[in-house]
Image (tube, rainbow, N blue to C red; front, side, top):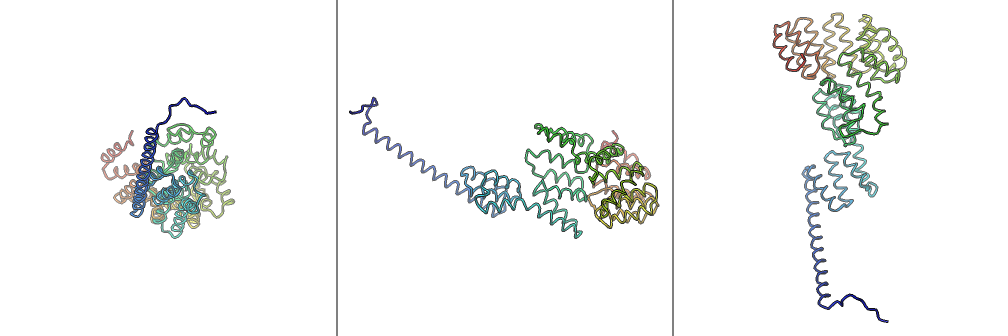
Amino acid sequence: PARYSSAPPITAAVATARGRAKKGAKEAAGEEGEMRGEEVAKLRAVVADCVSKHLYSSAIFFADKVVALTGSPTDIYVQAQALYLGRHYRRALYLLNSTQIVFQDIRFRYLAAKCLIISAICFLRGKACEALENLIQARLWYKAAVKADPFCYEALECLINNYMLTCEEESSLLSSLQFAPEDGWLSTFYSCLLKKYDEENSVEVKFRQLENETFGTGSMDPSLSRTLRNNTDLLACKAEYYHQCGEHQKCFELTSMLLGRDPFHLKCTLLHLETALELGRSNDLYHMACNLVKDYPQRALSWFAVGCYYLCIKKCDQARRYFCKATNLDATFLPAWLGSGNAYAAQEECDHAMAAFRSAARIFPGCHLPKLYIGMEYMRTHNFKLAEQFFMQAKTICPFDPLVYNELGVVAYNTKETILMLQSCITIRLCG
């Protein structure tokens, strides 16, 4: 039997009209697709042109728009290449991994590997230049390594420990590093590793941020928070801050606690030695020196500890001998150079003291202490003009150390420029 529908019959005119409408829609869609294709092709050409002209920021911008329009693996690869050429290595690697195309083609894997290895290559070049005593090039390569990968801590450690940067250069480098939003804690941690002559409140706020894990937008995992709060490296940074502020008893108590927890933490050991010397704790120095020489006979730190012990008990000849041995083992160990100079100065051997401090100033251009000590030696011989010059050089390197202004004040007092110096101190808020 025939089936009947309640719908009205489609007339020939209606069918024709619908056919024309569908055909028109297809043609319009085809034209739109053709226009979109032309637009994408134009953008791809713009990206290629920008890369050829080394305009990598522009290339990154337009490559991102191409990927938004197409989502093509080839276009993602081009965007990753633009990021790589623009030295955004971690971002390029993240793009390749997050889009899950890294295993689709050997080109993608090769680019991902280059993103990971570039920082290591820069670091190795820095180490090679440092071994050749080309400190200027070493500094450039270490900075390049950290910029290529902010997680390359070894390069930053070399820059800090070898005093290759001034306070201003350290701040500039840190502000130039590109951290992901979730890595904000690392930026704060790095800022704690740098010279700590900023305003007292500023430094202590950074420590509290790391201890409480409140990085402006919220707290992190409580387990990680507990780990950071009790982290040995963070507490060693705090001990270094106490040492630089002249709070030697606080520093000594903290380093004693840390060494009880980790007896082989060498940064903390160095702080413990320096603070024990300041406090005149010869017994502690003796025991530390014996243990270090037994455990690390080839490290400069061990013989520096022996020198500190002899300097503490006023046997400057023996102290100089062991400080010299430390510098022979490691010419980039600043405390031994300063210890040697101070041992000579204690015996009023000005020329030898100046020679040690000048060597330190040459090897460690980012440290203001050698310049400061040279100025002190000139002031000891009443050469106030030269003393002032070196104090001003120390001030240029580190404008936040109160000791520099104290010595400038002594020079001003002796050269009858007391009022001028007092006004300068008031300006920098060191008088309250």
